[in-house]
Length: 98
Image 1 (cartoon, rainbow, N blue to C red):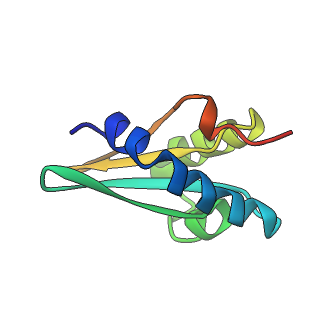
Image 2: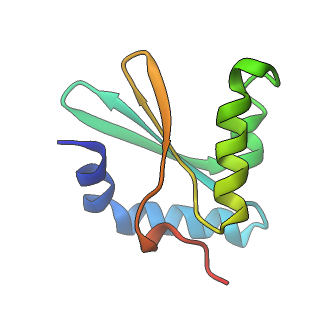
Protein backbone atom coordinates (compact mmCIF):
# COMPACT_ATOMS: atom_id res chain seq x y z
CA UNK A 1 0.00 0.00 0.00
CA UNK A 2 1.34 3.45 -0.86
CA UNK A 3 0.78 6.58 1.22
CA UNK A 4 -2.01 7.92 -1.03
CA UNK A 5 -3.97 4.68 -0.61
CA UNK A 6 -3.42 4.74 3.15
CA UNK A 7 -4.60 8.35 3.46
CA UNK A 8 -7.62 7.67 1.22
CA UNK A 9 -8.66 4.65 3.29
CA UNK A 10 -8.36 6.65 6.51
CA UNK A 11 -9.58 10.03 5.25
CA UNK A 12 -12.67 10.18 7.46
CA UNK A 13 -10.77 9.60 10.72
CA UNK A 14 -7.91 11.89 9.65
CA UNK A 15 -10.34 14.66 8.61
CA UNK A 16 -12.05 14.45 12.02
CA UNK A 17 -8.69 14.75 13.79
CA UNK A 18 -7.80 17.77 11.63
CA UNK A 19 -11.15 19.42 12.39
CA UNK A 20 -10.62 18.96 16.13
CA UNK A 21 -7.27 20.78 15.88
CA UNK A 22 -8.77 23.54 13.70
CA UNK A 23 -11.63 23.94 16.20
CA UNK A 24 -9.06 24.56 18.93
CA UNK A 25 -7.69 27.49 16.92
CA UNK A 26 -4.59 25.83 15.48
CA UNK A 27 -3.63 24.66 12.01
CA UNK A 28 -3.34 20.91 11.50
CA UNK A 29 -0.48 18.96 9.97
CA UNK A 30 -0.52 15.26 9.04
CA UNK A 31 2.58 13.12 9.33
CA UNK A 32 2.63 9.65 7.79
CA UNK A 33 5.46 7.23 8.49
CA UNK A 34 6.15 3.99 6.66
CA UNK A 35 5.84 1.11 9.08
CA UNK A 36 6.73 -2.13 7.32
CA UNK A 37 4.20 -2.67 4.55
CA UNK A 38 1.83 0.10 5.60
CA UNK A 39 1.84 3.57 7.19
CA UNK A 40 0.91 5.08 10.50
CA UNK A 41 -0.29 8.67 10.77
CA UNK A 42 -0.32 11.38 13.39
CA UNK A 43 -2.27 14.62 13.26
CA UNK A 44 -0.86 17.49 15.29
CA UNK A 45 -0.77 21.27 15.12
CA UNK A 46 1.69 22.98 12.78
CA UNK A 47 3.14 24.87 15.75
CA UNK A 48 3.70 21.68 17.72
CA UNK A 49 5.37 19.99 14.74
CA UNK A 50 7.66 22.88 13.81
CA UNK A 51 8.75 23.24 17.45
CA UNK A 52 10.28 19.75 17.15
CA UNK A 53 12.50 20.53 14.14
CA UNK A 54 15.60 22.72 14.33
CA UNK A 55 15.35 26.24 12.96
CA UNK A 56 18.35 25.93 10.67
CA UNK A 57 19.22 25.97 6.98
CA UNK A 58 18.88 22.17 6.65
CA UNK A 59 15.18 22.27 7.60
CA UNK A 60 14.42 25.54 5.76
CA UNK A 61 12.86 23.73 2.77
CA UNK A 62 10.54 21.78 5.06
CA UNK A 63 9.53 24.90 6.99
CA UNK A 64 8.93 26.80 3.73
CA UNK A 65 6.83 23.94 2.34
CA UNK A 66 4.69 23.83 5.47
CA UNK A 67 4.24 27.61 5.47
CA UNK A 68 3.33 27.57 1.77
CA UNK A 69 0.71 24.83 2.28
CA UNK A 70 -0.87 26.69 5.20
CA UNK A 71 -0.86 29.92 3.19
CA UNK A 72 -2.78 28.16 0.40
CA UNK A 73 -5.20 26.68 2.93
CA UNK A 74 -4.02 23.11 2.36
CA UNK A 75 -3.24 20.86 5.31
CA UNK A 76 0.45 19.88 4.94
CA UNK A 77 1.21 16.16 4.79
CA UNK A 78 4.78 15.20 5.69
CA UNK A 79 5.67 11.65 4.62
CA UNK A 80 8.58 9.83 6.23
CA UNK A 81 9.90 6.91 4.18
CA UNK A 82 13.20 5.23 5.01
CA UNK A 83 15.73 8.03 5.55
CA UNK A 84 13.87 10.82 3.77
CA UNK A 85 10.94 13.12 4.34
CA UNK A 86 8.80 14.87 1.77
CA UNK A 87 5.80 17.16 1.85
CA UNK A 88 3.03 16.07 -0.46
CA UNK A 89 -0.03 17.84 -1.73
CA UNK A 90 -3.20 15.82 -1.47
CA UNK A 91 -6.81 16.08 -2.65
CA UNK A 92 -9.61 18.42 -1.73
CA UNK A 93 -10.65 16.67 1.46
CA UNK A 94 -7.47 17.89 3.15
CA UNK A 95 -8.14 21.54 2.33
CA UNK A 96 -9.12 23.82 5.17
CA UNK A 97 -12.63 25.18 5.27
CA UNK A 98 -12.94 28.86 4.49
